[in-house]
Length: 420
Image (cartoon, rainbow, N blue to C red):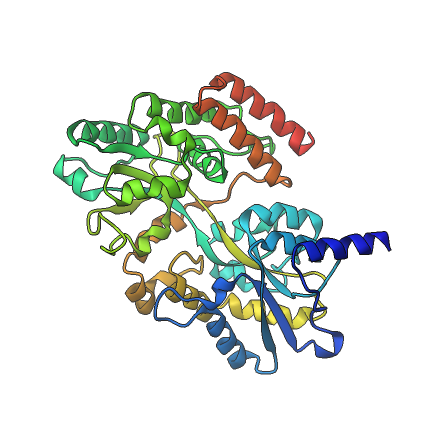
């Protein structure tokens, strides 16, 4: 009774109302929980929730879909519901950083056996992002992939080609910076948050490293990891990256590029939808986007993120909820997200669709980065691992610790976090 009382008090604190979800006698109704954006469209295309309902009515007319608008702090609500085995929602939205937490707790249903078309139609990088312990636990619907934005006008003006290696990136950034007053050479997110881990992951592979060796051991204390962190420090020390970057999040540095004050920017690809809009961008028509370059011994990668829909294992309408997920995983709904929200969806071939191209003229620039997309470092305890990596890497780039100290700490602390 004390446990139940505690759960109810926690629910009240979170502002939740337990509706009880779909009852056994009403399992034709499936409830989908997500934030209010599902009913929004950023273009003249229908909002995604309307597309889902229309396609569901076409394929499964006997199923009714209820849209449960969740509060801003979705994670708090979901943790309460899952902990109490509540079926208020049958399907719910999940963010990338929650994957290991929910997968480890058993709060999701593995989908590959129920929806085999996922592996047939979705890019592997997108499915890997929402996999836990080898199982796909959610259907992606909006994602992010990273790459390199650059000022095409400045490179052309000064006689440079887009960089194919990190050495070329640094050389080009420094040269143009010297000749263009008030221009920053290269921007990347240096604040202590998740984007720093993603940028580090990009550099780790660019220098020939990987998350794990052949025996499954983490490679954070490796020559490639050393070069990745040293590269960040060198961009600051040589001045192509401002020293203030150690306090900048992605959204703080982004305006510096879009206002025309930087040559290169590592960032998520979602800006593709509006960089040519002169009302939002000062560099319309004067930019381009490519995979982030790698050294000769490394490989270019794009780091994936985003949102997906998972199946509540405590749902009393599981079979119909799976049918709803099948509809969401189909081309019609995935295309609906692309038209209403813009890229990125990992549904293969989507960006060859004429209507998608019309709504997203720069969508073809996504294809090269989608093909090299990988997940963030794999871990059963990703939140703890990411927090540790943020702390240590930020300590190095801000000068609090030496690179050698950070590498040793990352190796040792990873073993503790992973229980090895």
